[in-house]
Image 1 (cartoon, one colour):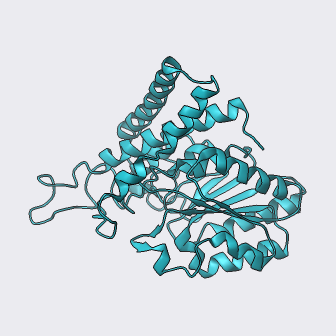
Image 2: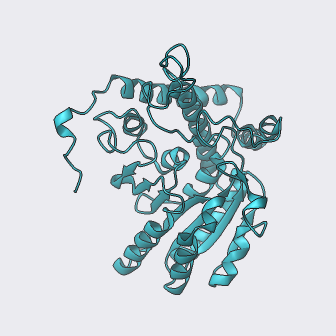
Image 3: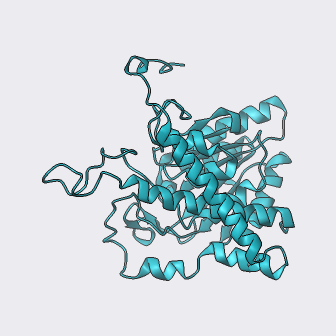
Length: 335
């Protein structure tokens, strides 16, 4: 299945927005965390600044999010991992509330109590978790619920290649295949599980090859390309909606930033990131749109400005929003 012109433009615009969002967060996150703002004797204070705690950004991995989410509806479920912003944006989670959540503000998705690894938006059927491999069981649950209700809604579990060595991966794959659940498992293979290179942690090159052991199709996408992901996801989503069961997709993608912000990245070969950026998927898709007559310089500038404005407005909303009241600490905890 080839994406329509509207889908191509949506994927490009959404990737531009995701990239601007992540690069903005990379700057905002460091506010107050580096000398001379930190306490004497500390080189990096993870708890300081407007966005405390860890931060995992997805610049470079945008094709996985848009290529899959281009096929999804509002009633489809997406469960992300600890690097979740690109999935959330592609699924339509509101930027203002999502950003406020990362700032720990009362206007956030979880009233500021979850942070960036625990974004939860029932209206858009999106959630994520900081636990490695934890996206798959909830996605199976959502898929089972859709099947029990007799709808054709699907669920998608996104996870990194390191999660395929977790028990939850194998348990979820087995259960989904056994019950023919309408779930799509999407593995983002960015080559590193934190700092561990895939070749020293995983016995096979393609995790998608493992699908056959569970009686489901496995699709490997060798390029970090939105259209290639779109085509793979089209087959998987159609299979799930028809009641034929799950699919495992693995995409070779690129992580331009560290595992977390502040990561010294000493495990990466010198110059690796610069080399990866030469094959940036955003200008590559933009070039395809230009060849099709769907984009020119003026339209591109307008599109990018609109994305920057939306992102800037979200960060401004988060900064100006109030913090939760101390007495609200125990509210909504067990709901």
